[in-house]
Image 1 (cartoon, rainbow, N blue to C red):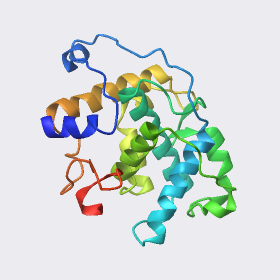
Image 2: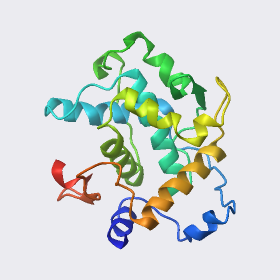
Image 3: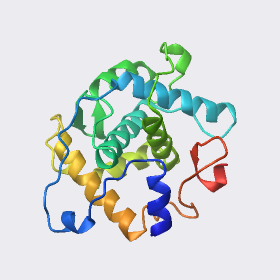
Image 4: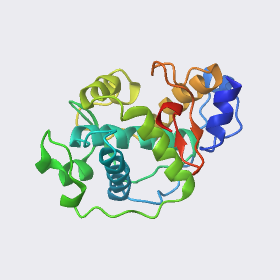
Length: 215
């Protein structure tokens, strides 16, 4: 547990709180500061990072459906660990899980195909190092799943389950859920138990958070 907690503290800002506060049901939500980026910038970063892996034959192109889920998990992880949203655009509850309408519409012409970055004027955004580290961690954890596996995962989670179809999932609901689940896994030492044979995150010589198998 301590090694995982320590590894995560090296890449994401985990507030000094006791998980027992959340077990007691006490609300300790952040004030939801304004996001530093927009959803297009976060999507561009994910596409470019993924393209580097595609070029090395280590990943496939990201579909629009998968992009929506990566944006959702990135937003939730940032709210839980860093206390602020990555983007301000609302996340909606749709049939196939959470989506960000602005990003969904941007890539809608790709249908089920992978998104080619060169076809969407993708530019490398200037992100703070703490946010890049968080996005790398989220990508490494969730991109290994297929789009439909991610859909199934979000369908088991309270933010989607407890929001009516086509309505916005409140940031406070996303934050509360991710704090409960992610903090519990950090303190229990089970954050990566749902990914067989994968070790906790650490940094390589370039300072990039990676899994040992991907170094």
